Length: 421
Image (cartoon, rainbow, N blue to C red; front, top):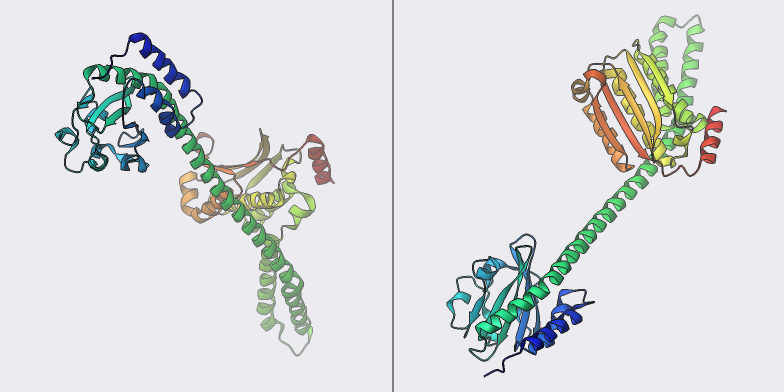
């Protein structure tokens, strides 16, 4: 028969448990640190702490003493646990003289093999509770049968109450660490994809410029030469000028289209004069080429900060504004287009608004264009918002780009002066 432990000795052991817990940063080290102190008044061949997960469906076991299959699993279904009635709050505790014969531990699907493999006969289980929630259980087992008493249940519950807040904090820290790792991995994957897309965009932009220069230096020059030859042939008396006129018009139209392709591939105004003048030039040219009567306004409040964006980002933003302006000119049936460039905290904001047929029609007519704009925005980490205009009329497209390229006010002023020149 075991010697009765006096209250003063119990308090000493409880203090010892609190002392050895301090500084333990994970479940396995914590349970191993307290096992010896618990053994001073609660004998065991195997001791474990089972911690439920926040989903309420799984739990993990951390053990000291014998190594069992319970502790080898990172998680297990509570519904298969031999002590599920305790974890579900159906029993206040479980005390058995011989677990191998106790039907509470053995049911269809029960993960009870360690009871037989390790000969765990005497078993004592008490819940670990924090703020009314069962977060796990403390379990003690012995090879010998009929070891534990009702007094041991009270002592075990006192230990569980002592351990519960510490293990609850460890569970919260573990969950926070896991969430942080998952979030960091997701951010790393997203950044890798974004950087790869930026590199691809930059390479495509270089290829577009190369194609534009090839068209200008070779194809457009050949077409110009052919046009002049046709014009000279038309001046000869033996040649019917009227028969050559359709050819001449076709060549002129072809050259005009090629100039548009070249301008789109190599935005020379953007490179030579700056962002705002390039947008204004495209806005005026788009309206002029469409033949529509549309009033246009551009307001630049960035003081040149937009020209300090990374080249790839700046060109992508210019392409998005080109597409947005084209949509407004060709599809909105508007009378006025406003383009505003401004600064907002750490971002450059570009706003294109019109007083046309509205958002639903704009999406229906220019869905592909809007999809392209959204794709470009994702590639450069920009925020895109497409909304109805003021009083529900027209369409408003807002693009917000991080100002990673703007370092100080001196650079802003320098960019502004360069754009003015």
